[in-house]
Length: 255
Ligand code: SF4
Ligand code: SF4
Image 1 (cartoon, rainbow, N blue to C red):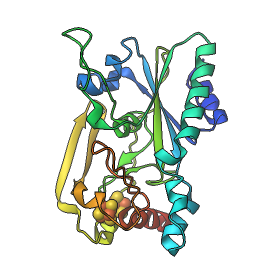
Image 2: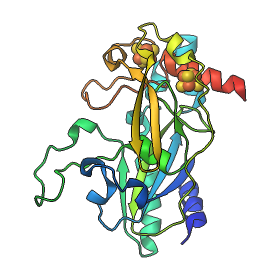
Image 3: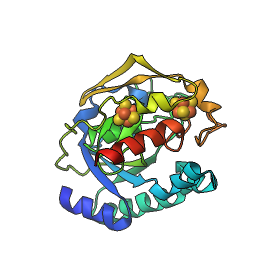
């Protein structure tokens, strides 16, 4: 089983995007978000991407329906995403390797449990899905704090699979999808994106940068977010909000 066959299997199962990161790209990532703290023999982190349908944003743009977008939020189509990820894992395990499937979880669930030993982080260990997607070469972080891919701009969500199967990693994305146009910030009625303040997170595979986001405004935003009222550890999904749709429109116009 090599990188090419893995990607074919993932796509045949129903993923839109597949990227591979080697575990060394997580070497200095802190324990509570490090894949090796979940599965110590992890050699590769495979990231699967699932598009948020373009048409699902039309309801918001036309003022006709909000329900379609909620159906495309991770909470709405998570059954599909989990099923595809699970079926992909089954096929890898059929070949004799182990897999641990992960979907995006609230970061405030980290460190809630009791460590199994003093040298281990407390469960739950929750990986940063955006960094995993970046490390797997799928795209980059845009200024508006959206993960952008060449295929779908900000319109996707990710799952990840940890495996002991050693695979050729994809190169880290070296293009530049975000052109710092400012359309996302300009579209926000609450001025929640601060273009003067760049937040940088440095990882082994590179630095993720975005403008500072006042997430409290996003939690009460009425322009089309899909809020997650029960979890303050996850930011609302902003793809359908004014900021996200401005980015979608801007990137589409450039094609
Ligand atoms: S979600 Fe709403 S408040 Fe937050 S940045 Fe986007 S438009 Fe502004
Ligand atoms: S709208 Fe422009 S500045 Fe904002 S994330 Fe998209 S490309 Fe970057």
